[in-house]
Amino acid sequence: MVTFLSGGTGTPKLLDGATAAFTPAETTVVANTGDDVELGGLFVSPDIDTLLFQGGGVLDRETWWGIDGDTHRTHDALTDLASSMGRSSTPTYLPDDEQTAGRDLANWRRFSGVGEFMTIGDRDRAAHITRTSLLDEGKSLSEATAAIADAFGITIDILPMSDDPVATLVHTEDGLMHFQEFWVAENGEPAIENVEFRGSANASPAPGVIDALDDVVVVGPSNPVTSIGPMLSVAGIGDALASTTVVAVSPFLGDDAFSGPAAKLMDAVGAPPGTAGLPSVYPFADAFVVDDAESRSFDRPTIETDIRIDSPADARRVVDAVSQAIDRVE
Image (cartoon, rainbow, N blue to C red; front, side, top):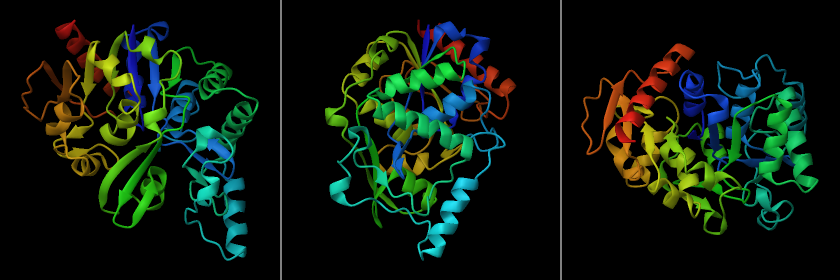
């Protein structure tokens, strides 16, 4: 049995090769929900959606978000309507008193849908409408995720890290921003002062998460700060990881991340940027898988391979290295 910690695109890419070593019945994925937003009244869970669309065989593998071949008529109509009103597609937070009104799960991450700063496809939007409606029926995020996964015919277990609100907020020189605003609207350009996981002090792991962490855990090559960090901020998850076998896959080639502002974010939270900082952000890891160009020695088992993942064959190669790492520490 193995549990993957997933966020962004890195871990889903790795999962393309997971069946080479682990059957679907043996596989659980715990997904980051710190990136979630409520946009125009719809609850959007980007990292969960990538897993759902991947498992359902409809993921756009060029972007690693959204649905392949999707249309964007609703998004385009929203943009046109906003323009006619003299409004742009700049992210617009709802007023402060609305940030904790409505669904508790959406606390601190509510955006206006006017102009819709995130591009959402029409079939993609159907998943958000379904999720939001299930939440409004009284389902938890875990229950809504399981229902949609079943509709897609997915056989691995996909668990949100928490059914409680945890919002990844980036403090920048230009002010406080939700991570989606920082990354999507601002292209990750503002200088970062700190990263906050608001709500984590009162959040609990979703049902099944702690049990899943009893198994061997693979921390996928996702952003250590804003993809894995929100999970570690939830009480009980860090302790569980310290008590089980953990293999962490590097998302870096030296100081450069495969995608996203990972190195920049690590520097902002006081960790050495790049591969050198992995022991700092993952002190619980029993072994690492790093790129074979690194020639880096850690104080725990380290497997080197080409960690670029551009195809299922690449994913299988990295999963093989993960299996070697697991054998070294079990």
